[in-house]
Image (tube, rainbow, N blue to C red; front, side):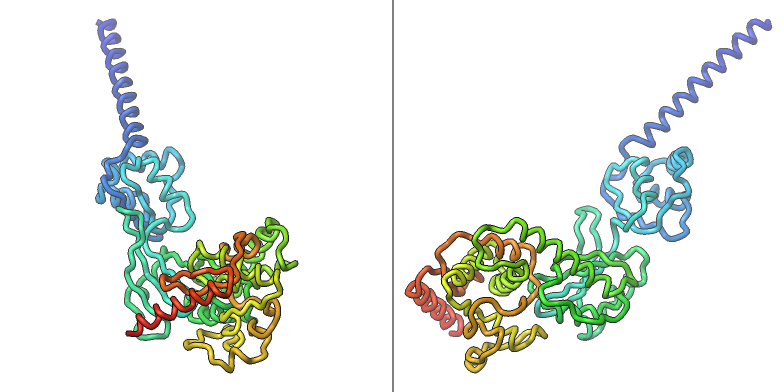
Length: 383
């Protein structure tokens, strides 16, 4: 009898161990295998949330089938106490193991709301955007101009959320004065700006910010990036340029930036000015004259007057030889590249062609014909 009992006990133990091994294997497959989520979601983890709350939220949104397995996995991997507050993008079919990595990894939120403060050449705009998990693209929720009318409720609401991300996007061609003035109305930044940075020394780009960051620190980042870009492109410059210093290249790049918004044209525009400098011709470019009138403080908003074109100023390239004394805006990377590696052309002239681009010419006769066509386009548009 004792032998039978012992035999039965061993059998039961083997069966129990087999069942336990099977349960563990099943649990591991559930934990590491493809999840049930059919479409990506934004998971918001509130400050102070527990793993139980988060796992139940995930189950409610269809991201996990067994929230208790996620909690067991978190305990086993020592991640149970590492939850990070924020909004996180959980991709479709993400495993529990992948989801735990997403909500415990740290860093900035990967989902939710983003406030973009856009510093343009003519205006400043604030855009409130929200990520659409299904497409992983941001969708505009609200847009407004600071100081002009009522602030949208969406902005006020998102400003108070811990997981809202901030970016300052500076457009190519904005002046340093415009950037500093714009930053004064960025209410998520702090501090005063002691001195306007030198013209041309700020790198147009998109900068991630945090509420409470100082305006001076942002400007310092912009200056450091432009200095790095300028050093890099100057080291790779073409031979035989008609200017000898990185500062001259920066001045040229700023003129190119203000002359065309068409990226593909920048090397050609650069070639016109480089050819003119090589042959001792004056640059004769309106943007430099405009800068001499406005000093970079805002947009002229009208055509140049004959008196302004005839005036003897350091920025009037109809009256002076060579380059103006400083840049006339903050050029982007592509304009910097064009300034140090212009296209190889015989062009000396260009004029608007009515499509947003320019018609280029080698001789004055060709240029005059292009000008005549442009005037016809202007006349037709006015009728």
